[in-house]
Image 1: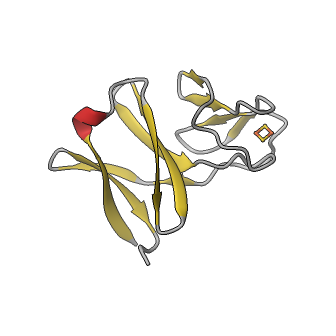
Image 2: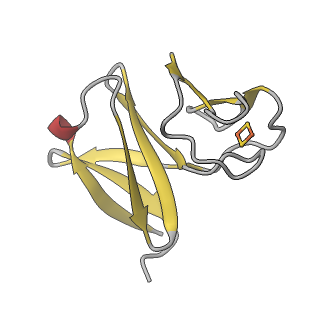
Length: 105
Ligand code: FES
């Protein structure tokens, strides 16, 4: 497992999100009231990108068919999705947001 710098902490204001790719993982990083959450940017219903969806508290709503997921644990809160999102550990180190991925090759 590897921690990767993905943004300076002041690049992402509360309510903001960014999408980035690390070692074939396409990841959406959200700032929700100062807490950072990283999830796969792929809806488990039909593989749509999630990051352009509405942020409702700690939930992201898929813009395609409106499934919702809890960013804290990836769980589905509103169908039609049934499988949880992949989530990635996040930490702050020396002013940077880091996300942990299984490899960087
Ligand atoms: S692709 Fe996300 S709800 Fe269908």
